[in-house]
Length: 361
Image (cartoon, rainbow, N blue to C red):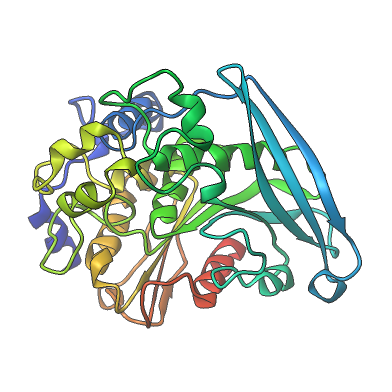
């Protein structure tokens, strides 16, 4: 049943991006930059330039009371020099007192709060993880204003062009600077850093890990259209490229508008993002009542990306036919994980536990 659903979609394959079918890791590694370029120039825009310099300053530190004394708490300012100008944004970093090297999650959040309704901090600590969280609006506003924050530096005295970065690319750039900070920390397991986000910030998490291979995993939570769900095969009630580029055109490059109402004709699809993260891990969370995110297409994107992991000779998306959209079923046996839970569009503690269980397997 599931393979038949995939066949009916007539999906483009990242393994055919060069015109010839790729069958080896060496061929894929050579083709991967072409796949990334395809996604950047058509959807998210080219990434902002790497900073000329990055500095970190701990502004506040608590080693006594946080999480009942189980965790260290730090407020950090990250300052990057880009285009000759300094840009600073705050990050809250918490990590367990127990243990030596910790798996760590970079959480791109809607708010600066720690803990937050989307971030059960003490439970994260209790599971042995550290977490570095920042508010996306501290990077640049979530609107069409390209004069503030990072956007104001990138577009100073410049106009947006067809492939210039949208806001998602800027938030992803900031997550990469948090990775720069974590690289300086002795308590961090540098090989076990995940980037996570919900909804528009789940799209951001996927882009971050696709661009920055230092991330071992991307967690995309209810990201849906232009994130973790295929464009093809949408039904009424699902968000489409037309919907998203009318309401949120500034998240993407200007080129992406050209694909409005052409979801079934794009020369790429969202499983290309999963493919770019291979052979590293991808974890997708989907909600039973989140029709707008197109849950079948979230599942099928994982299925479609499995072929890249096969090239590497490792498990990709491991599932059985009766696993398709079964609420409460967490599929964690491969390097692509899928968590399908009851409820609505939300970053739930169940999603966090599904992610942490996946990372601990």
